[in-house]
Image (cartoon, rainbow, N blue to C red; front, side):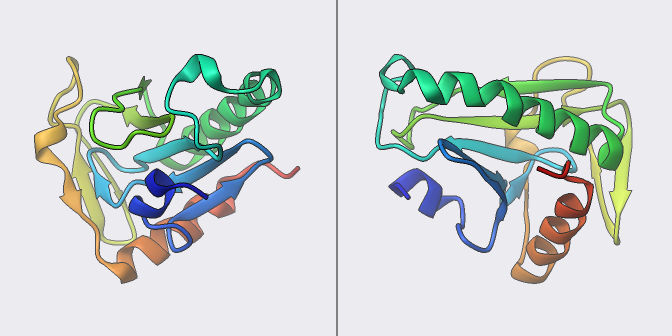
Length: 144
């Protein structure tokens, strides 16, 4: 694992692990089901990833969209590759929707809808909520 993956709470936030990628629950939820899709390598440039990572990414994205579609019923989905603070290759994944989505007592409005995600509205999740959200999303993850 790399420093970015560690920063986003691995292993507690881990939802799905692949050969070249890992999907984590984002501990600061911008919308319900906010994720981090992180490359497992130490690459700090997207183009520095091996060709196999790009091939596998198609499957990972399909799994993300299937799981979040079932769990959150998003209307749109945003993948933001910011990499300003955390250097290793990763995306912030935000299911987008009008209004509020709720699961297991956690209600999150999409404060930026229909424009860009409002990163400043992120809700910090505690360990109990993280565990519950991870289990919930794992339950929607496609079988491999």
